[in-house]
Image (tube, rainbow, N blue to C red):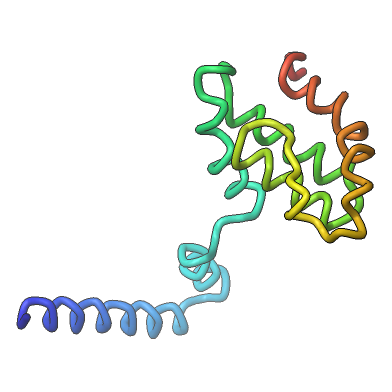
Length: 130
């Protein structure tokens, strides 16, 4: 128990010391320290979740996942449908949208969303990048 308390106290002092030091540094150095504690970018997080589903199927799973993300983000204008599509890809490795993931009023648009994303998906998966 004492070991845990001491560990927590040391950690807290390091955090506070780092914070005080960061405030005294130049602005660009302070930004570097803050960037260590930032959450990952949405695209990076998407690729991290998607890539394991692509292992064994593609030589470069991160590239395929990144391509799928970029095309989905650029092609699907509706934020609810885009988010559902990205969720489906990151969870399964293929474009998927479950009805429960979109509002009932937008569920009729799911088929049209797949039509929009079909060609870019095939390009990401089967055509080499230039």
